[in-house]
Length: 81
Image (cartoon, rainbow, N blue to C red; front, side):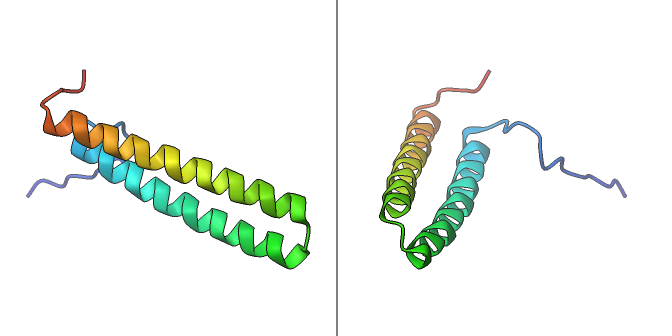
């Protein structure tokens, strides 16, 4: 019986793996930004709240664009080098 161990830090070899990795990362970052926004609200600093909100929106929009573009490339048959 062969034992196969996947390296968790290897580069994705297909667009589907890239999509899965990007979605996992986007989810983790959104949870961190949610925690940071709760901390910013608790501190009552309006500048910090604005910075966290702007950073959160930017990260989520860029992450969504990455997932959509890699999904487009996957469905149109562009292969990874």
